[in-house]
Image (cartoon, rainbow, N blue to C red; front, side, top):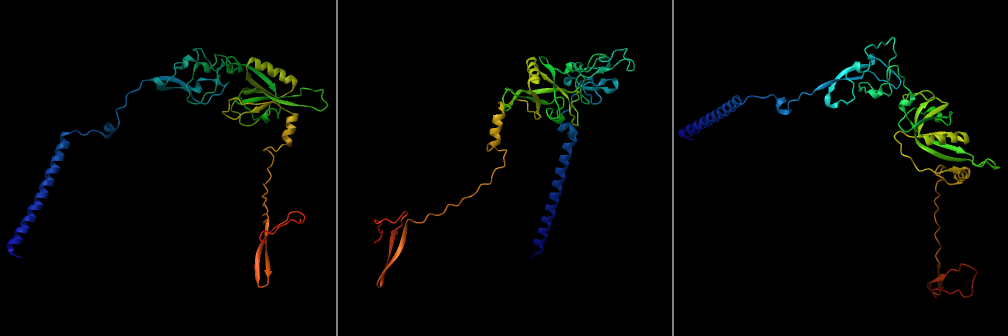
Length: 320
């Protein structure tokens, strides 16, 4: 290769490398100048809008869990700041709105809770009784309803598993015709979805262990209270506990001893079902039989119709 060619190629390579270096430096300088002219902004300001200041107000809340009938003292409360838009209109803002200026926890009875309140829940006036008040059952009865007690035992009271706040149905068992030689009993559901207010003299809705009671206080209308009074004198009342959240009434009908006997003798789903027995049908024999007839050196197969009954003289050969 000639010397001039080598010199030309070397010079071209050198100029190409210099051009690349100059172009890279110019681009980097232009980018740096652009960043110097545009002030940098924090990432938090670019991603999220600036938080607006929310106005707050002091609110009295429970400092611990309070149950119905518990005495309310200043130690069970505290004041916190909450957003003004989230505070109920009747919320209390200071202890002075609950306790008077001459309140003395040693000489004066405290206020009494008229409802269950959880920790950090806002204290509302209608949930607290007046000074020297008491958590009476009347504070828990809804308008238009009455409280009535019924006698129960370990069987009719669902073995003590019913607690205040549960919903029960009232089952009434009676004997319409006591003069009959054979007793005829009848069962009816006379009330449904009745709220339990108390067990004996307890209104604790957080009772953990079942306790057999002698009386159960129910919340009913005044007409239902009359029906319960008559039912207690004429028969046996039993409580039927409903599942949690099942408050809608269901369709029921009366059941007496005769229907119970029919249910006991019927193939109900409560009985153990029998295992099905598979029966394999027998194959029916063909109505025509094949007979081979030999005549000398030849044989012939003929069909003969089978006889189902006694031999008859008019039997015919099908083939011959």
